Image (cartoon, rainbow, N blue to C red; front, side, top):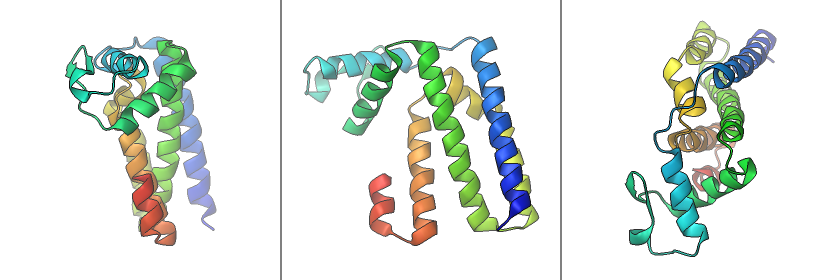
Length: 165
């Protein structure tokens, strides 16, 4: 057991959650792609299955079907409310941080690299912006990648890690 590492990880996750709430509360959402995602999902849920005909404000749909399913879930869960969607992404963000911290611990162990890495990871203004203010689909792919890496490192299951990815 790495009690100092676990304690620091939990403290950072708590601080990240509080900071993320403050970001959502005080910094305006920046529309870049989320409305395009919602219009693509609306086309799909209206019955369109021809990828060439599914379009958003930024052009035609270029993401795989899983993208549609995940964003359909987010849109339904948030009932179309941007603030609620931001809090869904806050959960994704903090969960991704927890997964990433665990990957770092597996890779670095109790060395100073683990501690420095997780602290530096939390200082990224860009990551907060992508997850909380722009709701980019890359955030969900990042979680999928980190989760599959954690599964692979934990039990070596190629099949499960590949499926999650």
